[in-house]
Amino acid sequence: MARLSDPWHVLAVKSAARTSEYFQSKLGFEEFLKVEEDGWRFVRRDSCVIMLGTCPDDVDARETGCHSYFAYWHVDDPDALFEEWSASGAMLMGEPADKEWGMREFGVTTPDGHRIMVGKSIR
Figure (cartoon, rainbow, N blue to C red):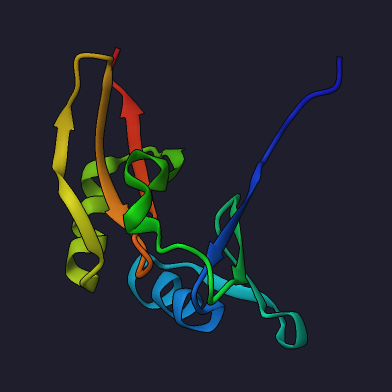
C-alpha cells in the first residue's frame, strides 16, 4: 500500500498576501513560492506546508462555525510553541490544556477566522 506523508494544506483566504504575512510574522513560517497572477502564496514551517489561495468573494471562515477548523498539527512541545506564538501576537484560542482524549493542545486562528489546533499526545 502506498504511504501518505507530509500533507500540504490548501486554504482559501480573502488575501493570500495578508495571510502569508501573518503566518510569517506571527507563526514563524517562511514564504517559499508566490504566484502573483493566480493569487497564490505557499508558506512552510518544518514539514508543514500551507498553500494560500486568494478567494476574496468566499464566505468568511468565521461564518462557518465548526467548519472553520482546517488542521490539527502534532507538535513536540505545545507549551513552547504557545509561548513563541503568544510573544509574537498571534491570535490564540486559549492556553495549552490536557484533554480527556489524551492530548495537550491549544488553538490559533488566521486573519480570516480559520482555526488550527496544535497538540501533543500525553498518553
